[in-house]
Picture 1 (cartoon, rainbow, N blue to C red):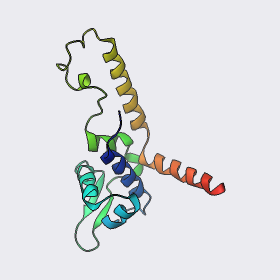
Picture 2 (picture 1 turned 45 degrees about the horizontal axis):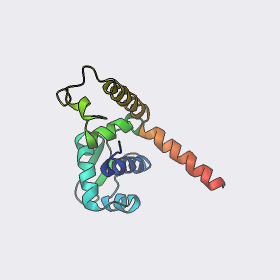
Picture 3 (picture 1 turned 45 degrees about the vertical axis):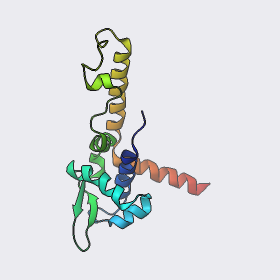
Length: 144
């Protein structure tokens, strides 16, 4: 499984917004410039984040985007689900009628366990955790 580019950019955008002063509106052009994303793609990425209450938008002069929640309350799973829906490792976990082998397929149980574990990991890490990890990594690089 590989996350989509939209999810990758959504995570990067949320981390960037979390690094800004609390309640400060960030211009779309600044997000695009710092994250290397086109305005059209950023709009596509932000729409589900706004819909799910992760990001707020302000229109008009001085408008832009900011986090709607504290970074400690936003998990990587929240961002993933806003972009891709529920985490599903295999089609048989989406639709029980997809595969007639579910009743006896041992691999089905493995997909289910893997999906549950990945969900737990993504749920365990908040955006605040990721921002802190990034600061530590950058500090370590500065020492070298």
